[in-house]
Image (tube, rainbow, N blue to C red):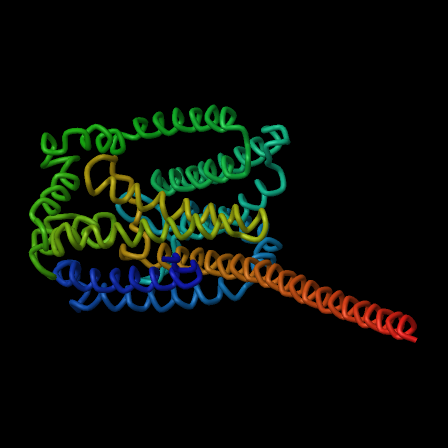
Length: 416
């Protein structure tokens, strides 16, 4: 049985996850909308639906804009994203929420620059590693510029602060370095340095240190720093096989903070059980696997690395979000791709998937061209062989006729 081509599998998987996100937004947020005084139980559902439509538009536009054009715009995209990261830190521009300045906007309309940076960075870093990295080139040619710009980008994001997004961007970068052929030892050494820096940052801020320590024993801190993880595990545990039903459970009634964003997987597990949780996990795993297939069949080095970076983005966020919900990773605030409530993350992710779809189409078109060329050569060869056999047969027939004529003449001469 042949696997579904990525250009068909990818949109199908995206639509299913997008629909699941809208449904879970409705199933998890009405009570929260009332408590937060949004004047309508439909508030989060309608906004998520609108963002999903914008996400579809972003997907189509990104698929229409060719990757070579995006490559030419890499500096504009990267510098623009850096500018937004700086703006969010300036008084009067950035909007603070829960102690973090991560948004730019007014009223209920805002964007999260770090999500824009994910898209800009994966394009910029894919081009940089495609041009500078390789197994036959010194590791420093790629490592120095990539690590330098990564430090700048990660530093600006950490000033918000946002450890989760920094971890995602760092993960994307090291996957690209390995995929581009940089020696594993050089990448491992650099990664160890970033991990050490991350550990220092994790314990430097009191709230992050509390989160890091409490996730190890959440029920020992169930009323303080471990409250979110403890409620997440309770929600998952009470879902059993098929869940308690949509719009039911402790997560719905506000016991689980961020039930429709950072901990949406726990809400899914409680309302739809292990069956629903496994379906969502399976779809995200299939999407990641499809991304690797796209990268493998990409027609050139840049598109292969770009597809690999987007896939690392989706896979990394999936691991961090679900790991947090299961209590095996510290709380980082990373969204579950296409499922968690939020506009900037959803639209940026859909744009990235649109690029991935375009690369899939390019790759399949190239494979068909090669296959058709091979078939054409095969048919031409068969025709040539057939013509050769026909010509050979004709020449043989002519020779036979001449021999018969000479034989007949000889016989006639002999008789006379």
